[in-house]
Image 1: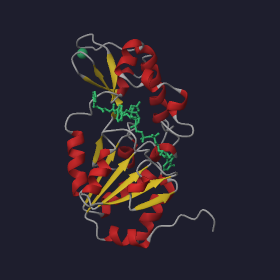
Image 2 (image 1 turned 90 degrees about the horizontal axis):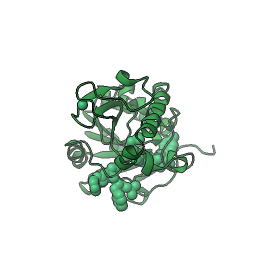
Image 3 (image 1 turned 90 degrees about the vertical axis):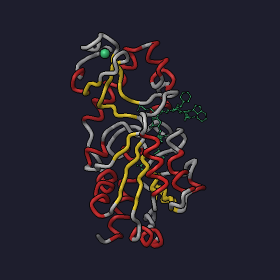
Length: 248
Ligand code: BJW
Ligand code: ZN
């Protein structure tokens, strides 16, 4: 049949003996849940300015605009559900010793799907923090705020707990992800353009340490020529198919 997704038998064999599996994920895994990706067709950065909306300078220049954009995205995300891709990754955790999700996504859908071992490289849109005293606030606290709220403790400006361009990743998270990567037997690279650093070093570190790299994406990316298996298709279709071939 045309467009039939082919899963290499060699990959299934490797998976059967794998002890440590790493899923490195990006916006594409949530696309089938109805959340826009950043780049490529329909990507957010085609219609919005990354510099204005996803940088600290942009926030300081126009805090209410940036706040409004995040409140809008929060609403969309809260109305979505994890898809078959997220759910299959959570299922892997039940059958393999060590499964870690290293995600660039901020949408919390891996957790909602049931994964428990998750490293969030770019933060989580469901949290805010105070610029001044660093106090954290759950998204619910300021859910109805149309403008940047003030911290209850010190009056400082509240911002989303996500990593913007030019900002460091949350302390220790990248190092922990690197440690997982160099111990991984198999690293799946799912739904990411792999152009944003330092995140994109994670699968490269895994490869350097000997892991088998498996890319799942609807198109070829920056990293495609470095992977062992490139499976073209939607992650919500490819991942369940791989899992079913394992016959667990
Ligand atoms: C499907 C699918 C389906 C669709 N199934 N697939 C020059 C060279 C190198 C680096 C730099 C440089 N200039 C600046 C930098 C550094 C910069 C960077 O990497 N920039 C590059 C873009 C050039 N990085 C940073 O600034 C980082 N910090 C840093 O470096 O700190 C050190 C430092 C500090 C101070 C001074 C100097 C250095 C921070 C990066 C933060 C990224 N933040 C964002 C926003 C998060 C908050 C929010 O959501 O609003 O993170 S940007 C955005 O990109 C988001 C994502 O996590 C990230 C990655 O995107 P992702 O997930 O790959 O999505 P897409 O859209 O790119 O790809 C989707 C893919 O899915 C596509 O391939 C589709 O085909 C596929 N797909 N449907 C499977 N159904
Ligand atoms: Zn404060």
